[in-house]
Image (cartoon, rainbow, N blue to C red; front, top):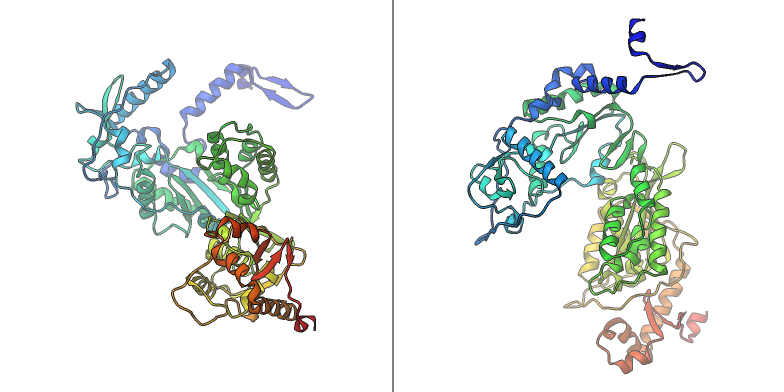
Length: 568
């Protein structure tokens, strides 16, 4: 009981609590700092070097992955100004310079600095960064995780010999240049991802996914996990790469990776990000709107119909759009906040189960939900998708938009949906899509769509009640072709699970009669071809007419000719 007398803890017998005086708590914290491996599982202590602070203070070796800084022809580099700093900032700067000099990662130089304008005149490295959805797809069967975070990731890569002078910078305390890759270099992310991908090329997508300096080790069988972790740590130690132990997590079933909470059953939004959105103050400037949209855009995979809801806010960020925060913008802002709080858990995809795809197209955007049957036998979302239509796409008529929504969804989730054994069950407004069962004269765009769709195994289902009326098109355009082509069928009848042949027959008859009536020819030609170039008098005369689904509408009502054939 000697320790009890020495520490003199405060004991609350009623609540069952033991607390130590403040000085004892501080002492314990200091003792813990003296043992940096306290949080490292004992089975990995042989890799202590990977987590050592002193080891990281050594200048990394030159490797084949050293970053080269290739300048554009006739590049002109001029030194930037020395900005004023607060006392706290100057203290931090001095400390940083001293630490970097001590480790040899920067060195004093006599020549003028150039870093300020360096990115503008550097050839850009187009090496791709991993897609977030692709990374998550690799984790579908994982049961156990270990997350490693590299210390000062970019600083682990050297500047190519002879290029160091290009990184020169000046401060109140002198002129220096980098010997390691600094943060802020335009090609740093691409160069570092290339370095990591090549270093772990035999493990990536097998037991590891990597995004820059964020390493996630995963195992389908928990018994194999220690071996997978040891293999990664071995490679890190061999290549003199070091991790920050306080940011590493070992052998966990729930892990926060890239701001997404991952479990063996699915994904969910990080609660800290949800709180950040819900407490976000109302934007007062365009830049503040852009900042908010940039933050929630990262979470869009959890937000159904994101593009449609955010459309009023996106409009505010367009050039030459005057600032106006009204009811529409406020409603969109609050709706996004609400949707974030209601974000569901997304389940892992299972290639052995059929996929269910629901799409919807409006005047300005499209949305889609990819689902599969969960353990509770209910359909659970695998992913959400939402995209705004481009200026050209916004001009498409309804059946083009509905089909384009399906194509964009198949394209977005191609890694899941291409060449599936079981047909993809597509739910949409299939009455509009029946247009594509008729032989049509394809333009180049339609031909590309048809080729793309041929790679997928799918069935289309009509979703009753989904159609909410004919959407108002923003504008009209026509697609021109150089020479007539033979009519073709975009969607054969066998892809439809429940086609109303009688309804299709009636629509086809109406369409044929409209084309045969010479009195309607000027109106149809205006709506399908000449609307953008027509004189104001013609535009005014035909302003109440509309052309949707290859049918003529007047004041929102379908135009049907007085025909005995149609009456029958």
